[in-house]
Amino acid sequence: MLRSAFVAFLGWLPAMSSAAYAQRLAPPERSTSPAEDITVSIAARAGGKSYEASGPGTCQHAPDASIRGTSASLWLVQFAGSGKGGLKQLNLTLWRPKDGDSDQLSFSLETKSGTHRIETGGPGESAGEGTVTILPSGPGGRLEVSGKEANGKMIQVTIDCSAFADVASDGG
Image (cartoon, rainbow, N blue to C red; front, side):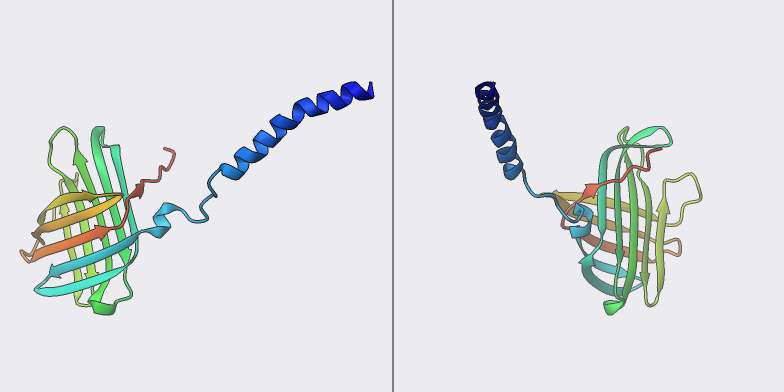
C-alpha cells in the first residue's frame, strides 16, 4: 500500500513541477495601466499666441465604436498642464464615421488668456470649424488640429501621444 502511494506521488510530481515552471515563465503583471504611462506633447497656436506643454496625459482610441447608431472610430485626448507656458488644459474628442460622413469634433484648449473651442458635426449647434489629421506611429501617433473658432480666430495644434490606450467601456 505504501509502495502504491509512493508511485502515485511520483506520477504527480512532473505535473506539479510543470505548473510551477509555467508560473515562473509568465510575465510579471503590470502595476500600472498603460493609460498611466502615456506622455502627451502639445504645440499650439491659438488666438495669435503660441503654447507648448508636455507631460502625462490620456490618449485613447477605439477603432470600432459607434455614435448615434453610426459605426465610427473614436479618439480621446486629455491633458492637464501645470500652467507653465500658458497652457492649462486640452480636451479632444474625435468621432470619425466609417461611412465617410463628416467628423464630429469637440476640442477645447484652455490657456492663461482664455479658452479656445471648436465643436463640429454633433447634434447641437456647431462652433467654428476644424479638421483633424491622424498620423499613427508605433503604439502612439500625432493628431493635427487645424481650424477656426466661432469668432474666426485660427487654431493650429499638434498633439503627440506616446501611445493610445483602449477606450474604457462603461458597460452600457
